[in-house]
Length: 87
Image (cartoon, rainbow, N blue to C red):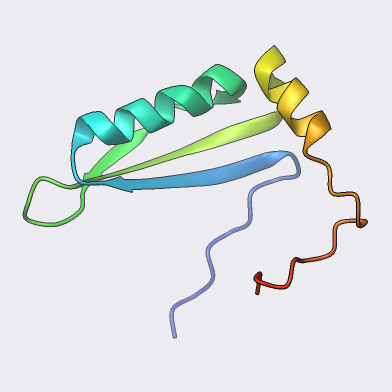
């Protein structure tokens, strides 16, 4: 059993992106950076076929306008309970 990873502070989220190519991973990371303040990404190989894994932290307390609008409209109406298909 490996030790649990530290949990980020309130308002922050650790993001891991795994993609078949570095360019695809960078494109996804760029979308998140347009919405949230973030740390510099760290890139790692993710297999022998050129796959890439990116790690970075986003700060959800410092959002750009598109994220504010989306976050406000996506608040669950059922008080935050898990959906039937969520574990």
